[in-house]
Amino acid sequence: MAEIAAASSEQAQGISQVNTAVNEVNKVTQQNAASAEESASASEEMNAQAEQMKQFVAELVAMVGSSKNGNGARATKKKQGKRSRTLSITRCRT
Image (cartoon, rainbow, N blue to C red; front, side, top):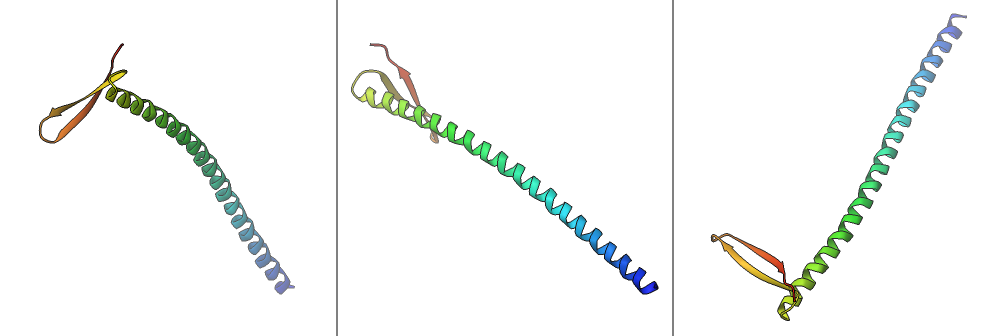
């Protein structure tokens, strides 16, 4: 009889350990799902910002390109010491 009681106790401990492990796996799975959702949201935001940046660059290229034709914008380089240079774009009215 004592052997049956000891086996039952060991089985109960094993079931408890399995239950704890399953709960931990479930917790990690939920954390991974939340991280994946956050990553997808950040990716969409970065995509939108990249598209906006592409539009800004296209407008800048158009402004600089039109300055070569003598209308629209004028680009000037300014020296600030030996190391740094900046490009200043000013829109011209015609």
